[in-house]
Length: 258
Image (cartoon, rainbow, N blue to C red; front, side):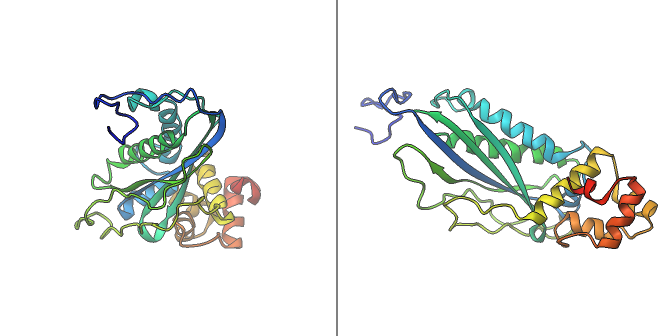
């Protein structure tokens, strides 16, 4: 008899009967990492990609995909999602974006497939949004980070789907590969305050259609601190630079980081 619970005694595919399980709160977080060229990474960070706000589109796509998981994965149960959250971490030193998809439900079965599907589709959406300037982006890994609820323990070892090596000849130089975080099987680390300010600043720029070079020129400051902050090379904008940018945009400094 098969040890796979999606196969019956005769080897035929089946949906697992979970009717005897308790309704419990279940949560799962999955990760995807996509590596870009330097040019594409800066376009995403600054909101200057040809198709618009890449991360906003990827976030919505990931949430929508989570809701459609039973339609995409044949033997998944249809479960109510109480939470669907997509977060991004800009890995500037690697020209990569880390996607964290967290799903939560109260159901008789787990929500890890919804988390994995959301992370996957968010990564594919980033690929689609930037392929006009980087046709060699690489989705380096997709994996489950943590799950809770029910009786099945979290994975003791991450199974990572990796692409063999970066390609040479990318615009913006050689692509650095994101490190595989093999030890991370509990909850992902909380996002630092600097990352939250950076994301708020990026959203502010996108919402007001501000381009770093033009905005910096209006403010009488170099554009390099803006790009350095957006891509994580600077933890925060210098105070004088932030004050001049706020004056040029006719807002208070704090309005740029909400």
